[in-house]
Image (cartoon, rainbow, N blue to C red):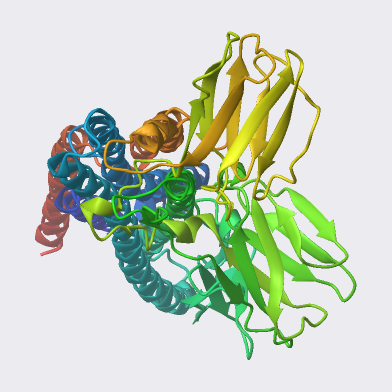
Length: 625
């Protein structure tokens, strides 16, 4: 009977090994499956005839090939890969809106300048004026279309973000249920291997959406924490993540976790990984950066052209109107505010604008203004104040202590950027006034340059500059104050009534320059030349329009390069971490096939032991009979 029992135990052990190996082969392609192996143990020996005789074998457990450190490495790499992947995909789409070499903003601005050059050459030509108007309109539409595209891209990111959060909540709930089933089955003193695999696969899937740190408890259940330290799953309880708007900025999304009566806001900058972190960073940072860059460019370029356009006369003899309309800045009050203030934000100096929005906080005595792009702060005891080319004032209501506001400045300017002229005749190509040298001049006096610098009501008034000698002159005319004995320096600037003139040479006593309104603006191209020169002026924070748009492309390209570099590195990390884990936990079909033959032979040998014991038993029975 001893041999029979030993054979039976060997048969059972081999059969269990065959089952385990077959299970491995069947799940070789199952995601998250860990290779299993049967753990054998020699049965207790019996003391017989002065010796211990073996009692066979027992299959005491079926154990997973599992390494907690390697599994944790895969989770971390998965979180990094998912964050970079989600952000890189979105950033590539964002870059395409700007990097259009055929009909992009930079190309269309160049075409506008070419059309303005035609007006300079033929200011009286209706065709040239019509083409320039169409070019201005196309340029403005492209700016606005790009802003709309960014808005659409943000909406797409929002949709994907909410879908990821819904899936995350489902996975957290499923993990809590797996915890419950693991805890129930652990009472059998055996490891529920397939449930543990399901647990680990869920943790990896959760990390693909949000970086989560797993703590494996002694009973095999897992406690899951977000990178922020907030608990996600504890035992059979799963927390719920929700997407809400920031109380300070309704356009900014944030994550909250339900842990009780009041949801806890997660710091999105501490999420540390997962597709949700990548999408939040893209919509809250990258899109805001791109819109601010675009808005600053539009406001600065539009303001520069508008300013010059207003200094000229159109074909109707009227003062020039703005070429472009620029969207107004907006103020967003925190939902927690108790004050009633509304703010007026005007562009004071477009060349000083920054590609950023601002946060304004009032503590009861001082205002603190924070530039969101770089965190630079300024503190004021009162308003109005002028900062970064913006004049900020309280328009109405009162500010209360603790009130917070988001000032949507640069990110708002491109939304309503439009061409404002209604007719080709409204191009202000001419100046209202022109200088003429006296016909009886005897000295070498010449006019070096003449420009209009401001819209003075007396811009077209008659003014005479009469020299009393080579070093001084008198001025007469409305608005001038009629100064006498003004010192003259060749090449110096003389300014009255909004115009500025440069005189050169040596005048004789009695020489004069007369300034008066032009009789016909049809052939005058002096302001058109200045409009053309606007493109080369330092209009955008010390840069020309072309340089500024190049800087926009460079900034966006830098972000794309950085996130693609992160993606490449995280892909390598994930590949290596997964390979290292699979080296331990993965199923090798060649090895399993070899084991299958080994265990089959062991099964057959055990069967022969049982057959031998049967023959022995039959012989004993025969002898006894």
